[in-house]
Length: 276
Ligand SMILES: C[S@@+](CC[C@H](N)C(=O)[O-])C[C@H]1O[C@@H](n2cnc3c(N)ncnc32)[C@H](O)[C@@H]1O
Figure 1 (cartoon, rainbow, N blue to C red):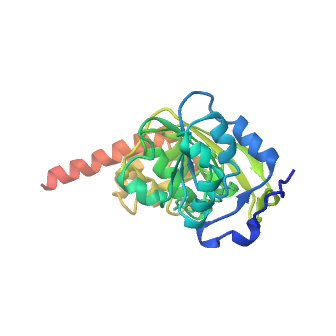
Figure 2: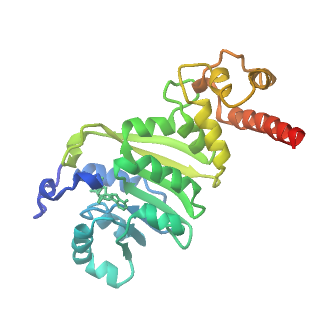
Figure 3: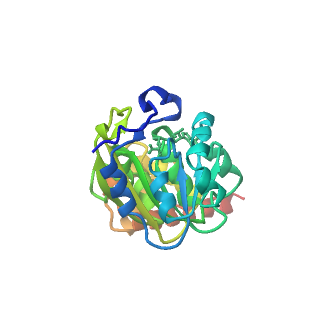
């Protein structure tokens, strides 16, 4: 069911440069609300847009919302005048990525619930994984991105992003959302992705290691890793974990990537010590 009653012409005001596709389907909005974690922690929403998801969020939780578009901020200030005055909604009119460069999005543990701007969705998820205050994410993204984060070892879309997300906690693609649920309709199918963090994991060197491991997904893991490590050591490391040299990057489990990294990093440290 699409709520087209709003007096605002969403199609007309949507700005492509900010990735604005407004979620108008009431059934999907309810599905998102029903999938939220049920504790007292406040919510961080990125990109409240016209406020259609925000209006449900403020009914049940304290919300801090980050919106980059000044015109939308003006609209939100009017629409949520009461919620802002009574402290239920804190509206931050800023680029969320710039804010994140300075500090966490919350001054206490929070859950993120958002229909993300797709052009920076992956970046936002990776930042949230590293934000120690972020406890979980329930975010709408392009289906392809949700699959990259939620795929299991052995599936073709298992990626460096899946290893990173699954190193922090449980990842699940909750449900798909068709383009018609939005105004304007995007060209792609969307999905709601849930990540419940058990820990905050941040190791830039491990991220670089994963980029190397998945650089050419159809090549063998041995070949990819040999671009950064000595081939003999890569083969020995794979053997020590009972992974043959013909294994492909998407076939290796998250925990084995951590073992492999430790073994090969030890190799680098060892070499650096020897040459130092
Ligand atoms: C896909 S729309 C979602 C709008 C609304 N939540 C909804 O579901 O209808 C993405 C929203 O993120 C905002 N946005 C885009 N880039 C942003 C950024 N860097 N920081 C904060 N908000 C941003 C857009 O202006 C837009 O309101």
